[in-house]
Image 1: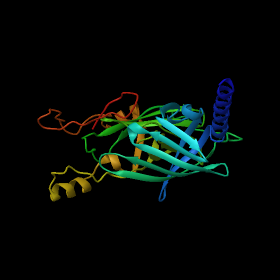
Image 2: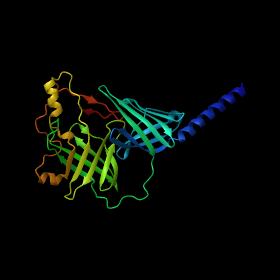
Image 3: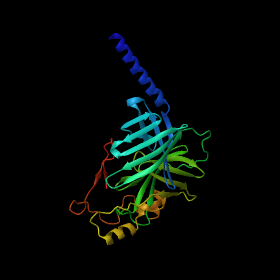
Image 4: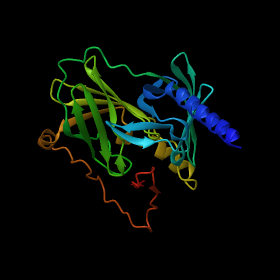
Amino acid sequence: MSTLLKIAGLAALLAGGASALAADKVTGRWDAQLVRGDTVIPFRLDISGAGPALKGTLYDGFRPYEDTTSATFKDGKLVLNIEHYLTTITAQLDHGKLVGNVVAQNRENRADYDFVAVRHVEPAKPPTNVPAIAGSWEIPLDAPSSKGEKAFRFVVEQKGAEVAASILRIDGDTGAFSGTFKDGKWVLSHYDGSRPGVIEVAPGKDGTLEIQQRIERPQQTPADASAREKSYAESAPDGRYAQKLIAYRAEVARAKGAAGAGELSHSYDCSRSEREVHVQFPGRHGQARLQ
């Protein structure tokens, strides 16, 4: 009996060691990308642990934000699940690169992306002559948003050439886009298991920031909307989905007479009898968002 127990213990130890050695092949920091058509969304993915403790960590700007709820790596195949987002990353380790796909689902639709990740390598030489853009900016809208807003707020955190920035709206924010200054602009991206997106931010000679959005306007409309209402909803101007936005320092925006961020173009009736309120719980952080 003693011999059998020793053999069983040795087998378990060898299995644990093999699991740890396998995980070593994928642990560390990766420069990952979501790819769909011409759209490429870079994001940071950290993988740590081994066996049952293996996990992936996604970032919101500079801070670790979302951990996977389960993760496995076996026979060269990595599977990362974020169950509260109904998101799964599946990838094969191929010559030091992770290649696969990402599937994200919700009650209304399913999004599929190609996935590729390479080991992160620090740049040999950081960019120089990087403009300072940290702080709060305001974005007047050419057309009010579907929520009635006349302006958004753009908040920037900066660490040298690296920037993390969010667009704040009446119903929440975009998440913190992040990236590094290169060729006279920042290409900033965000993916924390949800809300994938990319913006380009270029400083203007007049002290403004030009923000190029790569954002698709949702086509979903209420099930009981008439065809006429649906057509209008899809064609009506909505500053939220403008391809180009211009951001000003607050004092400059006031001098130009622009509306303040969060100011509405009409009274917004939030009574339950007039407007249905949807609350989305995005994850383990317990932060609710109104839609």
